[in-house]
Amino acid sequence: MNDPRRPNLGTLTPLSRDNDYVRAHPTPNFWALMPHQIHQHTDSSCSLASAAMVLNAARGLAGQNRIGGLVSEKRLLELFKETGWPAGVALDGGGRKLLELADHLDDALKHYRLDGWRIDRHPVAEADAATADQFRADLAALEGVAGCFLIANFHLDDFYGDGSDIGHFSPLAAHDAATDRVLVLDVYKADYEPAWAPTSHLLKAMARPCNDGQLRGYLVVRRD
Image (cartoon, rainbow, N blue to C red; front, side, top):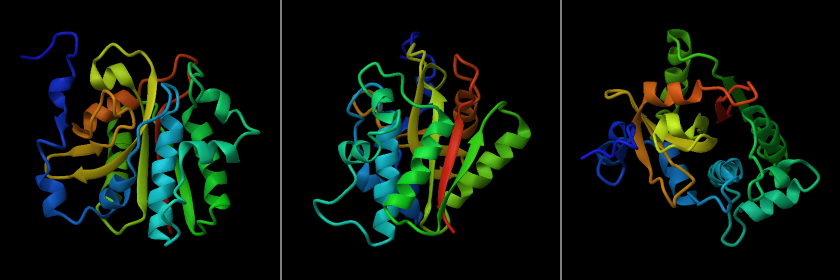
């Protein structure tokens, strides 16, 4: 029986119960990301954990990863100690906005010498048809060659229906076009396991603006 306090959970399907798609299709970017899934170290560090996952996946594709030399939240923060990122991801720090994370990732790509990678910024003002078409086109790239990673910034309660009136970041790992579902690798592993969500459901959760009016949305980190 569905818990009435968690009305949206019925729209989500855990990967542990529905993994036929990733077993039957190449999903190169899922397999690049999945080994690097981590749990955010504070309630505010979802942007940091998402960035670490994507950077490790990209570095793996570039042949840079070594045992003992992966990007961790701690190592990443050391690179940005002169910015507002450390304070933002501290306990009750307030997190980061979509475009702030994009700027941090730009700098991180340069630091790790990930030449030929770029970040496309997609603030979402409305969950309209044009935005949905663009989102699905970007999701389709996940199913192509390795080297395309999406990070979504969405409203937690709109997505999970658990009463959490805050924004959240997590990477997206696959898109099943036949069922129009997207796989979210949530970095808050204490509560949220990897799960499939209807594309339209995630889009609506991204379309809810922040309390200060800034837009949520998604980033595409891709190799040219």
